[in-house]
Length: 244
Image 1: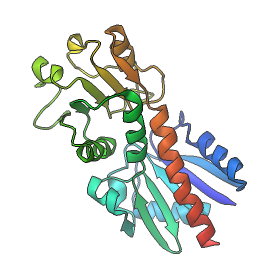
Image 2: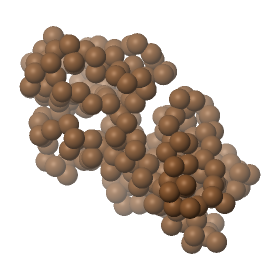
Image 3: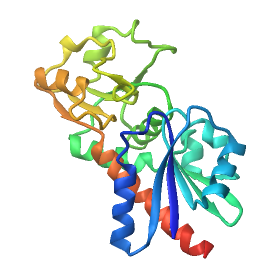
Image 4: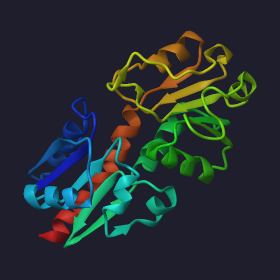
């Protein structure tokens, strides 16, 4: 039986168990995927969790995607360039970190429409994965975060207008901060804009509703979640049979 899990906070709303149980059923692989709610974590605690639960792999979400780089023995080259991981696979006695968020992000950007200059909202692990995808596509972007060269307070209307695709990589508007909005100049949004909110619960999010009011194209995080989960499942499944 393959045993998998998710670590992060908050994760009670997560659709990952349903997705991975679906992959198990589809592939005829008996198993269990469980949420492990944690507000603090380190390598020792991760190893104990793997050993105690007999895990083959785990997914990592907020707030651990960057910290988790230091928990593993090896990091996939792509994840190393990004500086964040969202998937850990145990092979033998070694732990390997991957970033499958980039797969989900790329699929979502395809669905959202043509490339355009992008406001990257947030500076965590998901934002780093997004920036890696934008760089591969040679798409200009501007990072806006609480602490940095451009903050929510210093962002000008001109800068916001010049980047007509806004992508929320923060938990604002999701289960941890329900109903909240990032402090942005929403009045500059036009029908030429596109908004991608990586939060998938609720759907639509407050930011998506704001965008819809102004006629922008909007998309939530469900496609990203599904596509990154598919890639993670491929890694888990291969490691499970390798470890037998």
